[in-house]
Length: 216
Image 1 (cartoon, one colour):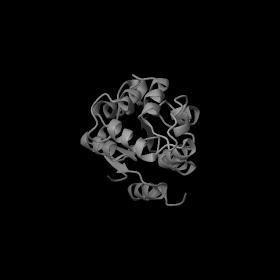
Image 2 (cartoon, one colour):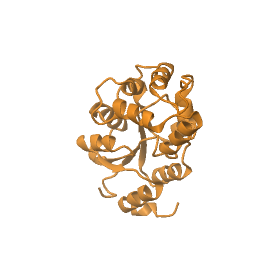
Image 3 (cartoon, rainbow, N blue to C red):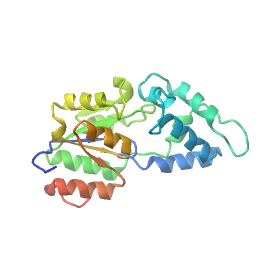
């Protein structure tokens, strides 16, 4: 995609505009004495590429399952080193406690906006842990899965985001840290970038928009 054709950038939230989710998860697992392999097993079963439709994570993202209900279901599947049960109250809050907005990525989004690029946020919610005041002030369009009863990587949520922007897929770039979501975006015609770290994402955007510059 060239600078001429790019009119909007659509950002994922967790893992893109935040510090790495994996770091927060590792801190939570260690603090609660949870065996990492038990969490990995549940994550693969509920969110993996071959997961059945309607898993607890899918239902949480669609707003069909409350955080409290999800906490209980997840806690029941986790194993601790000492054999004690995982306390269900506040599991997701503890899981995400170490995930914070990443100043580098918010600064990059602001630079894009200042360069005349429109901004949208498209996120699968695990309980709506968003700094909404900060997000709403920066992003023209905000699409959260539980608020629209749709989820990535399914086509309708991308269509909803594009409709709210009033743009075609060919005019937008989507950035996400999860490969299935990137592939889903490409399947509906969006150019999509797999985010791994702020520096590489900035470099990719600078190649598309030379006026953005390379300095943070």
